[in-house]
Image (cartoon, rainbow, N blue to C red; front, top):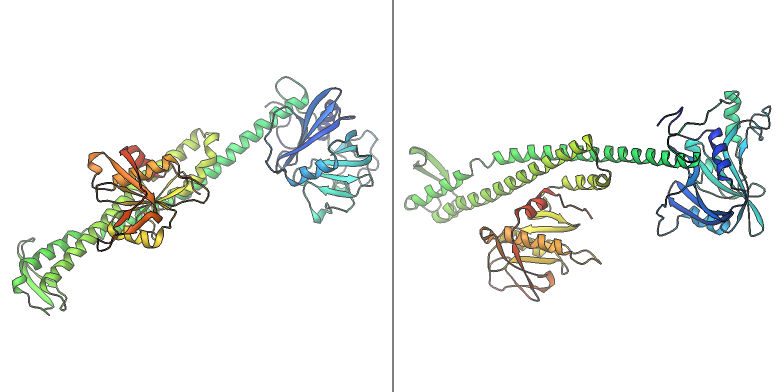
Length: 499
């Protein structure tokens, strides 16, 4: 943008020019909208023409000018808009001018045509009563205040008790400015900025501030998204370091199986109540080794203890390896996103990046929940990969309206989708859950399979069967062809929409 000034507040000369172009005197106030927390829009009619005026009271870009673009409005009107509709809609503007420096409390020796105070006084008549809408464009002190003819505040856009800008208080528009001006001496002169493009000064201002706000919003969104991603990246790196250390603890898990084999091979030499077994270790060049036994167990039971420790360690290692693989995929995605934000941020995507970044910090394995925890379209999916996890999830973590998925004719995971009040299960979430059920079953190698599903309230435990076994009723069927991309997308959190 060329010119002597870019962005920021309008100076008093520019406000004069805006008002002269708008020519508000005699305009009928047809409607009032408040599209956001820092602006109001007056919809006016004059000389057979409808037009709109934006009054923006943000600290960064306080301003007033014509509005040609359509802006969305909240479904429920905001407070000040509702107030103005009751008090000025249908009224007519009698005059609109900027307060001059000759007003009480300002420069008493200034000429009548002295500099303006960046406060617009809009006098109007509504239902036979005179009212005044004051618009102060002072950056952080910007405000819009409606008073009666005597200057008593009816309400303010920003209610500021410390400044006396609340209902039933007299509005002293220039008291704070007078004190500041008295110290500052004669006011500075400000030229009207030169703006590119065609049209009136009002139209140029509208384009200019639209570009400034859009650019500023993108920068703020990008900074916020990158900050969230940085926190996520550091969290993922810390988790990777911790899990890598845990993985090293499983380095000797095969030793448990070897010790079980050694006990089994020497059952005939073990007496009940024996505390130690000394044998030749045929896994390590027949070196002598002492194996600790539990005196209250039989020799065969002691061997089974070591086999069970091996099975548990193997499952633990599998879970840790799975989590490490998930975190590495997540870390790569986070770094790609940070690089994209740094080089060419996509404004349309920035709004969801921060939320997904926060979701990426959640571990795939939740310490408080058995199994894997994933998300699909804001629905929480829990995968129980063993009979113990399936049973614990059924007993403690799911409720009657939650959904249950399981591969038909194959042993495998129970996949639960937590229900959300008032929401039906989306088809994509059903397909995600069904794909996980096949992926974590013995039928995975076939690349496809049938999955039946029903709500948890239609499951009943099978008497005398293995732990976690259930019999479903009112079940329906899905046929799934496994798509590795769908599984990886879920595991990487790329489809996360946090509730």
